[in-house]
Structure formats: structure tokens, C-alpha cells
Length: 114
Image (cartoon, rainbow, N blue to C red):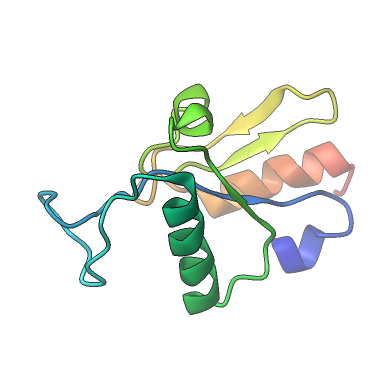
């Protein structure tokens, strides 16, 4: 979507609390510890972005999880924020409830594409 609509809409990937840290019930095979500082979280986020070869601009939630809590984002969530600053689309809890087609249709409506 970013490659297709990146000129019509701003896209951001917000790295939040690690969903599968060491010591959790389902730790990642990457053996990532839950960061304790913002700089640790930022380092993990940048490493993740590079490892996944993501070109979407990266934002990193603060260590108090302000964004994650405000958007009920754990473990993953996709949103569209309208030009008025309000939530125009709230996707299901990811990754199982992601519906990229549904989100794309909502984005098309918002940017006026038929």
C-alpha cells in the first residue's frame, strides 16, 4: 500500500512494545529482550526495520507505551487517520484479524479513488 498510495497519503510504522520478548509465553526465535529504555527500543525498532527491509517511515513509541495504549495497538494494529486527525479506519487485532483489502478500500474512499 505504501508503494501504491505513498504520494496520496502519509504512512508510518510505529514500533511499540515487543510482542514476543524472551521470558514470555511465546518468545521470538530472535531472542529479543523487552527494552527497558527508549534508546534500547529504538535500536530494536531500527534493527527490525532493516531486517524486514521496510521502507515505510519508522516512529518509535515511548517507553511508557503512550501510543500503544492510546490506540489499543498491542500486539499489532493498522489505522487510517483522516485529514481531520480522527480515526477513519481501525483494523482488527493483528496479525490474525488484519484485513489489508478492507483497509485499502477505506483508503481509496478517503483519497477519492474509485
